[in-house]
Length: 103
Image 1 (cartoon, rainbow, N blue to C red):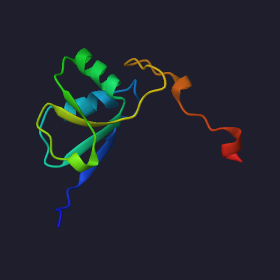
Image 2: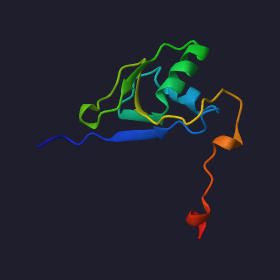
Image 3: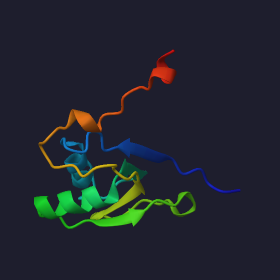
């Protein structure tokens, strides 16, 4: 019987906000549980370079979930439709309900 191994999923939140930075900071230490961040992988790479952080981004695969070492971050790639720049919020990137969705 396989041992249950909990996975904690974390969303990076607003791409132009502090969320991606916080997720990258999580990767700087080892954790007891498996963590997976839902974010754009390329945004995280860009922000890590801007922050001067050394982080290995590991693609999420459920069957391979394990606790990662410090400096590694498991990412479920959620691609952005448009590039984001840190500190520059853009309301045009927010999802808007379609008329059919609100009826």
